[in-house]
Length: 460
Image (tube, rainbow, N blue to C red; front, side, top):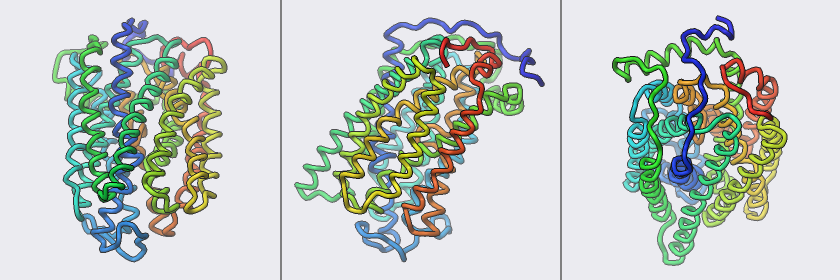
């Protein structure tokens, strides 16, 4: 099938308009769900679940555990490798869930209801992490798998609103504002978490209890602020919907999408590049706190303060790279951000143990490139989707988005299992950024956008 052979696709049409109220609702879902990534995935859950696994292995949670082992489902592993493996398992399962969900979301008339179901399953599982006590590392792993899959599913539905709300020239801006708002919301909750850790440690509460309550706060935040998007977003008629069971159609469409992606080879190539470099980004996000606590031996208050700084710098960084994209083009700005990521990984390998300032400086560098690289990736991919298949294609995209990567954590976990060194695990991530950047530079973006049946923006 050639690039022009798209007879079975819905015809391209201009994106419908959207109100300021609807765009505000769309931004606020990023505000709501970012609490899960920031508080749970990035800061608290890695060290928390690792400490619970250490207790199950008979080790002191505050010390390195080189001899103890745990055996989830009969598989022996070091406690420090458990959380990366749990992330990998959750993403392996999303491979079967998210693309099919995207096909369903493109066909339902009540997309907001689907968003609500995904968001509240995820936030409910996060709140239930309150019961992960003692040595219940299996319960902790299971709840994280449920929450992470539900989170990814909600983002598939959420992202599919973007090309329906705004045209090609405005997507970089709207996507960047959404990411910036998300980092601001996640940062505000994390500021409260930092205050809780500071005062709680002074009052004599245990680190594990403080972490548990902060994790629960993220689930409550996610659930509460999801109400505004559900009220303000608009359900639009599906493009090219046919009568019948939308669930069955969604799964059939998944097979059709995978089978016919060859009709859009440039879209596929961009997606592969994104899956590679974003695996590296998401592994850094998910494991930075564990690296800081286990390898650098930094106190949790320092880790929370650093990630809080990253959140607010990422707010500005997303807007800054969004502005740069309007000047030089999103593709060039994204490529520049990946070059900076390579420098971040090299710097992380040389961080000294027990010294907070170098860790904070590196965190500042991460903050400047984090939000922009994610926002521009989303807006660029939205230009490469055939109209009427937004959620379906974002289902494929979400397999490696925001905390749902699996190759990076798997590589990190295997390297740690073999070397007991988080530093070597970190440096192993360089390959994701180098190979991903090389693949991105090979994508002719303007030709790829036209091949998908869309109108290119003025500057790419």
